[in-house]
Length: 101
Image (cartoon, rainbow, N blue to C red; front, top):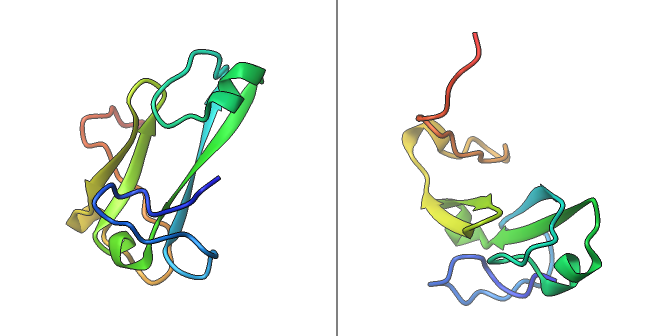
């Protein structure tokens, strides 16, 4: 359950979805505990699960959330490539990832 902003330097409590941005990450075979995945998910050992993170309105204008199974969530600053456009979702782009042509 989300209780506060995912930014560790922000203590904004989560009350409702009206402000900020909710991020959903799907994981497969979450059987090994990792950072930021609830123990309840890992102990049930489902085939797949979703973890959620929320950035408050102020943080969502400056940051985005990245997640991987081994390191957990990371707050990353938005760059010009990922600047918010209206209410469109913000998805950070990994420039080192290979592209498909």
